[in-house]
Image (cartoon, rainbow over all chains, first blue to last red; front, side, top):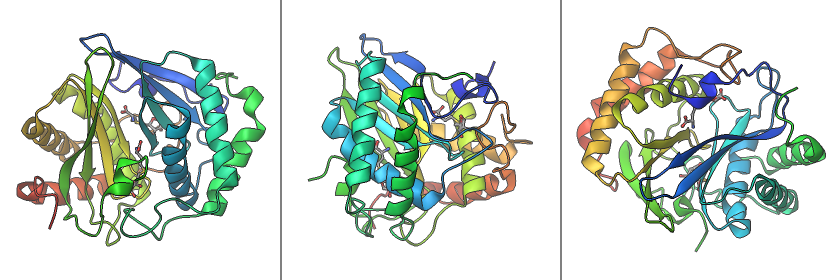
Length: 151
Length: 151
Ligand SMILES: N[C@@H](CCSC[C@H]1O[C@@H](O)[C@H](O)[C@@H]1O)C(=O)O
Ligand SMILES: N[C@@H](CCSC[C@H]1O[C@@H](O)[C@H](O)[C@@H]1O)C(=O)O
């Protein structure tokens, strides 16, 4: 058994898009972090292009915090098929789906990518608002399927 | 002021490579998450190519947990210049530098990328062990500069 949770997940059995609780971490004092695997693309069949993924990261990171109080981190996967979302002391899967839906609607309505300049970003040239919107729209289309993780 | 911590960081003033405490989140019960910005490349001057970055993600995610007990998440940035590392109840910056050093040495010594197959990974074709080693070697060369965040 490997240290990394996703290395023990059979990626050939999942049905993207989906939202899956990847694991929880309990601190010694009793706070609990829930980490979600938000999978936009079917593993080894599709992936997000980086400029669109990067813009989606900026848009989701900024907007999700308007819909959820205890976001610890939202970050892309190196495989470009999804994001990890970590929240603290929030154990409500259905609410996470609602928060994600609202956040993706914000992406569709955005006029610009927040912080896509050389002062606020690590690679300001690698952005695509259009790309981010396409990813968000495709994800939202399949909203009814998000809770079905396995085929 | 924006929701996202890094959007309030002046990326033109930093001197990569560096390791920076990006922020802390305290749970209602008193557990504290420390999130580090591990910057491999100078913002808007360089970036990691995705296959190398992806392999580095796998290698670091698997190996860092052998050197540190309370890793919550390690994930790349969409800008491809760094990773975020979140740990719980561990407030020792110098120890994080040691853990990172050991983890990057593991990368240099690896014979293969863990979990780089279609069962365990979201995009098995997008890997480069060579690329990951180049990134790790370059980072390790500048170990003395990691704690200097600003130029
Ligand atoms: N995981 C973070 C995401 C912030 S957006 C990340 C960006 O900050 C900048 O440093 C880089 O351009 C990067 O792409 C978060 O949860 O807030
Ligand atoms: N943030 C995680 C990193 C796991 S490696 C991530 C990989 O899992 C797989 O689902 C994908 O291929 C992805 O690239 C962690 O901290 O463990």
